[in-house]
Image 1 (cartoon, rainbow, N blue to C red):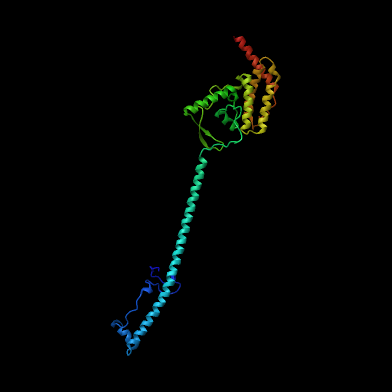
Image 2 (cartoon, one colour):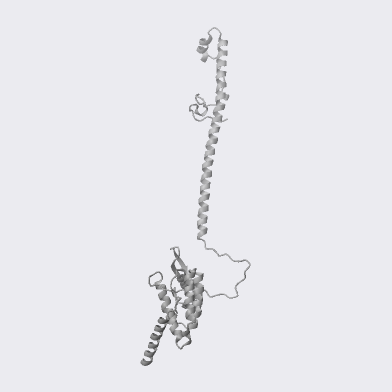
Length: 306
């Protein structure tokens, strides 16, 4: 049975009695016939000592029985309090463990987000019969930012240059570049040792076949980069209009068309969103003729100088 430990009043037992400090079941009735109780016996019944002793024993026994009942109630109250305290401690512990588990799961998910992930693949598809050369990181970032980019990186020569640079970077692993992503976060990327193409050429300096192959790949890549259909279609019409322009049938016609393409595609990008913007799909033959005149004047001057 629980041993009382706090001599407080009866708030633990449900009545106004003083808290018991010892178990009344272990108490023994005093020897009321001893000389210690002579005065008490005399006060109860001076002429009949046995009767006085009997009354004392009876009074003590009744008092002890009340204490035994109180002890039971007190012990029950103690157990109830201890159980409630244990339940409260357990609830606090469970809550702390739940919070710790929640925090650990949050940290795990955050850490998982930072881990590099492999893309998914189609279980039912085999490899393509033709694998395109990848464009350079330089060209890729230009398109992602919707910026002007020369056609050299999209020509066969430019793609081969990017492949060589990429292979060299993968072998030495020494190149690191900084890049601002679409989410305005600064990230580190490994890549070619140069952020641009070492052999980059202006569009007007490309052989016409390289120019034509380059713009076809360029259009494919801007579609992949999610440029708006309006801008993609305008550029498609621009390039197609140049490819089919009748001036190409004339001597030096390809070179004049290349100069026009180089000059006015660059100008189109620079004026987008301004009052000077224009529809690039509309080939301005007056400007084509002007470029042709400038071109032949330069040829004439070179011939005289030589």
